[in-house]
Image (cartoon, rainbow, N blue to C red):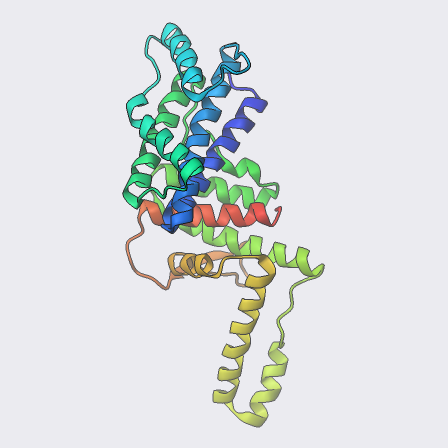
Length: 291
């Protein structure tokens, strides 16, 4: 049985792993280095959690990574008849992590991809064995979100993602992001976020300048409003535009009880990496906005 404290630690562990994924997808030198640190941290954090769970005592100056691994592996083998997986595959990750920290060595894109795969498999198998918890389905990062409405959409996105329903996952994330963005802007400006020019103002301008002029002016103001929102929300513009390219258009009509996702500007087939990117982008935005 996993109590609330253990589950919270598992949620934090999973968040660290997903942050590693975000860094890995950036494919810059610094992000590759950070991704390795995140994956390594996940593994060591899990080992220390198991020490607590199995009552393994760690003595001062004897808590190096591989010493902890040996102690945990012995106890896990005794209790579950099978030891920890992937020790040979995780060793290069440890070497890369130490080389990054001590010498500033930059791991390649392919190495980081391999490390991510090994780390995920290790986390999934070990957490299932020791805690009887499904890493993908039962450890929900939505627990980091306080707003109940947003949490429902994130939960639905997590469920769809675990079933490889990438399109439906991105639909829920698209709606959640629009709701969360409005809430965050209201918090920032301490009132309802109003557009720079109201519809009645455009109507008055149209009488004097014509429809074409109004359309151009409206487009210019919409771009300005969008940029101001991105700055206020502390979003990375490139990540935001990537999310908008993958996500759905969200509208809410007067008759709707809640917003709906009606379509996408990009007709490409959605992959797991696309859904993972959208999930991480939305979740990290909500955490940044303290929703």
